[in-house]
Length: 130
Length: 190
Image (cartoon, rainbow over all chains, first blue to last red; front, top):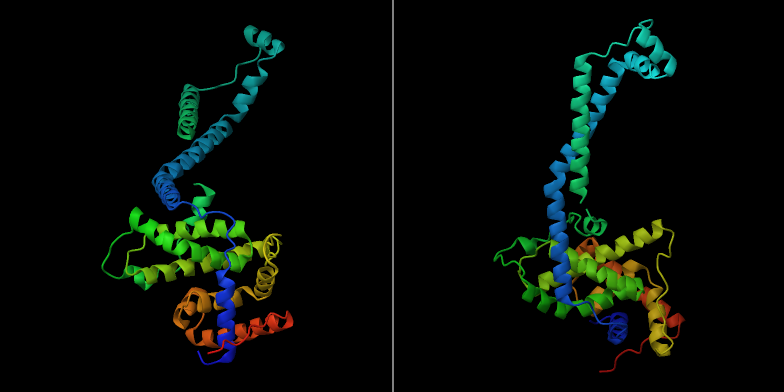
């Protein structure tokens, strides 16, 4: 170290570094070690759960699309069926003046299957969250 | 995933060659404790002098060690590990400055001054805080940590040849600041 500026700055830096400005003790190394290991396990668990999460999101989309398709398929029949719940329509329907809307057994079957799948998915989501 | 974990365990950009060397001995808790006790104090001082805030220094110190443990360094030598630790800390400090800038906070928060500290210490701290972050890092790593130009270049992401020039400029700037503040150090007598 021959440069006078370097020598002076070095001396100044050494003196400056000697001041201990730490207001509190450093964290315990064992605490850091345990926390680091916990964080690692969080990352590993997250990585392991990722395929399940993706499958869950996929099944939400499939079920939502199935509901949309089902409702679109029988929309007119459903609207007529719902309107038929007024007292006047019930009376007319009973006298045979107005024919009942056609809701096939296939539709009802699909309705039951989709409903069951939705309930299962909801239970799975709730249990997974817990 | 926990947000902290996501930040702390983000993939590291560079994995130093020191960790790929044999013999491969993963760090166990006892070894980590010994290493921590040897390095944490000086690392805290470095981060504190860079940021000027003790709470930030505490936070960045912990993040540095979490990243260090995430990297699962294999023991080549304590010097290599120490160098890697300072490099990680430097990256985190500069990330902190960038985040502070984005959040429109002070890029360089004023150093904390405590009424019971002596005036010289405060003046020295203020003088050092006048430098740019990279100048502070250069001077601290070179003069306090005794890092070589290659090590400083690696830690700060600079070319090794540039370090010499940048270090000279940083010294000159600190010299100017000290002269202006009337803190210019006397040349040591033999």
